[in-house]
Image (tube, rainbow, N blue to C red; front, side):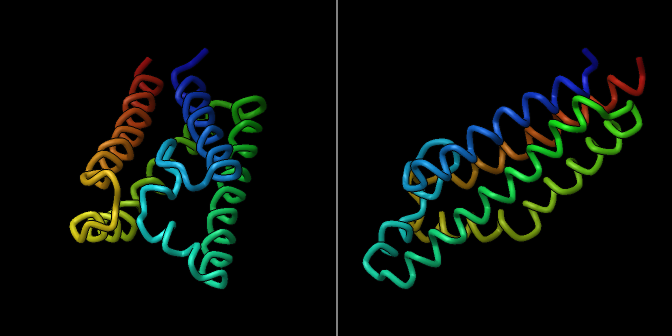
Length: 144
């Protein structure tokens, strides 16, 4: 199995576990669910706001599921060029986290709106780790 297929399988597995967590136990603090946000519990006090939050959580999970199924198709049937461009696309799309999402979660973390404190840093390191692993796998694949 080539390096690209391997990292894609690992990524699909991690993302699939996140989808299950978001669908089944969105309020948990595990698996990058929304329980880390203090506002999630607060939203339960306002049914209208909580309905919106629940909708958005399920929307994110559903969107992730679409990409997971597409990645599975690419892993199974994609030719080498398709896998190379898939990994490049994942690198660029994951990097967008640092443009809008990371600044927002960092600000919430600094304001004490995230539990545990410092979660934004851990999440940032994890997301950067994905990018690094994809980049390393791409370099290994292209140079071997």
